[in-house]
Image 1 (cartoon, rainbow, N blue to C red):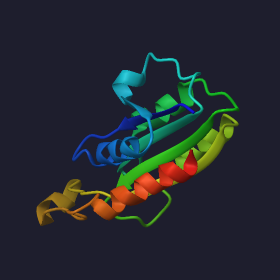
Image 2: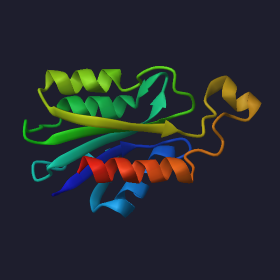
Image 3: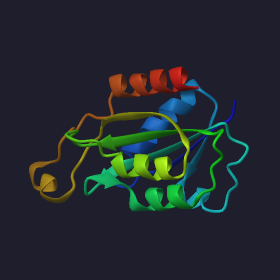
Image 4: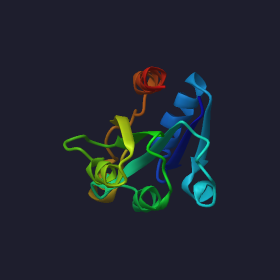
Amino acid sequence: MKIAIIYGSIHHKNTKKVVEAMSEEREISLFSLEQAKNLDFSEYNYIGFASGIYMNTMHLGILKFMNEVPLSSKQKIFLVYTCGAHYRDYAKKAKQILKNKESMYVGCFWCRGYDTYGFLNKIGGIAKDHPNLKDLTNAKKFISKLA
């Protein structure tokens, strides 16, 4: 069973911490968005797309890549994201892309992540201690159950 995760993690590397924790639990090939752009993912059984949340959506580069990368209907696709506060489904656009591609969507993991975007910087940010040990443990449980 081969698993790849393509991730975009910019500001505080919250998402990178989560996917690295997942790779401690399972053998996973991790690729930053830049590394993934010219690779062939046809050999992977599971492909994850992971991102921090920017302006209420996943990283635009990740969404564009998801839309462009060839995916087989046999590949199982999952999503991972981190956000300062969770008050809506931030993966909605990503799920729509996968639905349009007729991909086999198998689940989503999210957790809070340290956020200092915009006015939050003036107050020192939110979710300062996230992702924390509990978040990373839950990420490991998610990937174990998924694959």
